[in-house]
Amino acid sequence: MTTLTIDIWSDVMCPFCYLGDSVLAKALAEFEHRDQVTVTYHSYQLMPELSVEPVNLQELLAGRYGPEQLAAQHEHLAARGKEHGLEYNFDTSLAVNTRKAHELSHFATSKGKGHEAMLRLFKAHFTEGLNVADVDTLARLAGEVGLDEAEARASLERAEFADAVDKDIVAAQQMGINGVPFFVFAGKYALSGAQPKEMFAQALNTAWGETE
Image 1 (cartoon, rainbow, N blue to C red):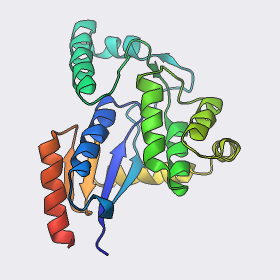
Image 2: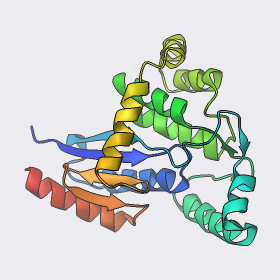
Image 3: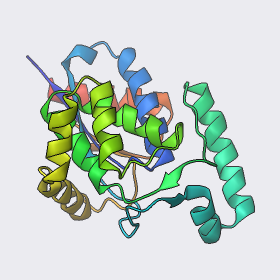
Image 4: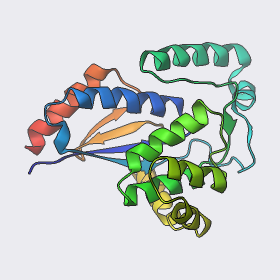
């Protein structure tokens, strides 16, 4: 049976990744061959220099972009997110190192729950203001998407998927990826950013035509 692969590089702390994932999901829902599509998430860190100790994301970014520009961008993102049923609470979001969250994503993928885990991590970060670097929090989130909480905690504590995270980051560097979300369809067609649904639909149809 023909299978279309979609590889997605993203970061849990990236608002465009959350949005892009939602738009892709809508395009897939309308795609005739959606049952023959396999989506795989890959790790990317926008701010790998961050500590596991949380700081207020809005305060951190205001120092980089200026409060007025940041407020306008967040207002625009919140409005776009609302159109897709997403709730962004930027004022309570915590900036942390996301390596452990990515390790959980790989653990979830190994159990067939990669998409569910990524969606839960996005919501935890952007909507609920949770610390996605905290192992206890991550283990609980794993349990909420149907994974074994104790097994997830053990995996995180022994850094079982740390090498997988590193390999994803190296692969992104080798491909010249310098921003996320980054989507690769059938290993050859790339889209960057939270594109409109029509762009995803076009990429799906083009990639399917060649895959088939």
